[in-house]
Length: 401
Image (tube, rainbow, N blue to C red; front, side, top):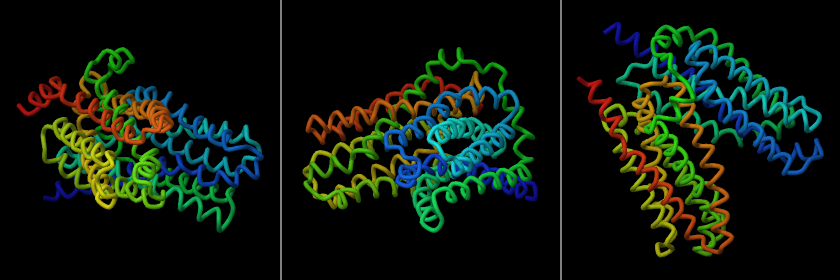
């Protein structure tokens, strides 16, 4: 009993520290956009230039994520995570001191370096340190924390800028991250004691790029991101054209989609700990979600019902977040967990690159219904990657014997 209590306490501490760092990393991704009007005025640049700051951040995050996974495999996740959190927070803090645009761009490149560590380091630590019976719930807390970071970033940055100024707002949130890095340093001793045993010496680009299962997971992330992009970026305007309603009304569907997705994350962690075939759960949830999105976009339902339908579609996606992460863990056979997560989650960037341009083109063609057809199509392809998981089932069968 005492040993179980100690294990639960350790799992709680590790999950809490890692997840709060994940929350900060997502907050930092959206720290600048709410401040764009102030930056535009003070730095004398346009919105195109300001948009490139986010591009700079995304470039270094995407390019370095898998190499950071290799580094985690060599030295463990603790120091890589502390380095990344410190660099990320420092870049945001120094952005508050920037007086010229080129300084801001360089700092966003630097911020992306820090941001690149979180997926490989976080998943490596959680996989190594959290008990298997509670891992699904830990992964769901980690996922929820990232979503909360996106959620709280705009109101926090706007409020801080309103009560102080944009420079002080960035100094405060960056300074808070540096302070938390010190807290994590003090309390993160549990991060390393088992993690080194989880490492595998064979991490390489060759192993990542020649494994059919890993490539399927990468494709799943691309398609999942592509499906979600249609709803997040274009559902409001598409519903406006289909139903001829104000955007203030059609935005309620997106609120329901994101809100129920958030609420379903933690129950999904409990579910992931109870089920064995996570790929089947993903296929069923994405199939039902894609079908509901398609129905919502056909235009024959009253809009109050559309809000509910789209909300359920979002809830189904949130429900299988932890199952998605468990599926990636199952595939970590010839490479380490941290490296594998780093590589496959880079697929999110692929979906974000392809999706918005495609959906914008469909809207320009004057066919808003096709936004929902395309989103459902991405979900259908994602399903196919989960159904083709013979290798994962064989590994799980071997592990249970």
